[in-house]
Length: 149
Image (cartoon, rainbow, N blue to C red):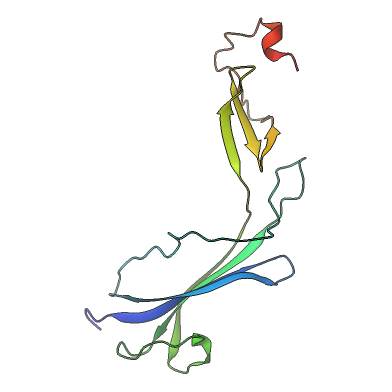
């Protein structure tokens, strides 16, 4: 279609582990052929979510994301929502993936002066993979007070 604008709609849906929809939105937009658009540069506010937790701290709860882009067969016809009910609508692309929701914070611990971490506002000690977060060169390793807990 050359440089004709393509009208379409992003449909975004998040589901819990019981396939209940916990978030959905439709974002109408017009694009030129091969034009890129990042639809997820938005703030999404979710309430009552189940958090993802790392091994030994809780359940690694995952949500399912269904994201699709629907276009009209003709560039001049505006798209209607819900788009799936229209015979003139074509699925252009779809992606489905799992994701978890969590917070991660890092700071310098006031007692040890070393790097500390929190997951979902709970302190966590990172271990494994030869990770040594407290002192990269172990320059304070002889100080009992520094590591006493």
